[in-house]
Length: 338
Image (cartoon, rainbow, N blue to C red; front, side, top):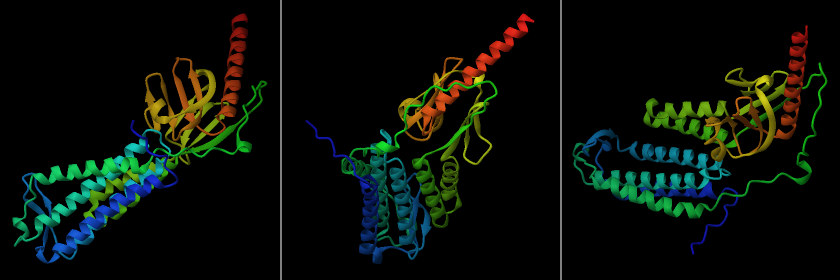
């Protein structure tokens, strides 16, 4: 019977991914120092589909550029694993992906050194067809070793008993009475992932040019800008907008709300991912796992948003929607009777 890996503790999984990338850097550096005197100047660093060299770097800059790109990927992968430390399904996949990428890049970096060693000129260097197979095999081995070493997803920290939110009572609102509930809902994985992409892109631009780093940097800016939303319940209904920005915004008016409640939501399981998502019969904002306001619309579909104190928000929203239906019904009755 296979033995499941022990639960990960603290930063064990990110440290495993970081160690895999540092081993890749060490392997490249060892190969470079061992064969430095046999390398041409410049060094062939980019190869066409046929295996011939079509990109070159001076021997003096070669180790710094290669180590820089390896460390950028180490930063990116470690940051993503750290951000998704408590993601039920993504945790093990990201550990495997991070370690596998380290094995792949390390094998390719060493292969570049070995292929250049002994060549009279960089133009004559070729990267053999077996290099890709060796790199893929190294990636598979690294991923296979990294996943169990990273452990299972750690248990998400539990709130202290005295900080637990009591179930909210049913609210009864009189006509003309105003209420407002608002709270911020954020996502540490999106913030850490966005910061990692931004840092990786900024580091890659001077090493490999704007084309290589700009996409990563822009992706990081978008994630950092959207890592939190503001959830508001008031006389307009339920409103969700990106924190500090008037748009994008989603508003569910009271006349579209059939019933409001709350339950725990897991983004991957319930919505297929993080951020604003839509699946058949359900849509909403899910920036993390945990309590969420669940609104059943008059169309029969659901809208959900993960936020702390979801029970209070749902109770207020339900009371506002009920009062709106009562007021609308009374107005319609008076008009018909008149």
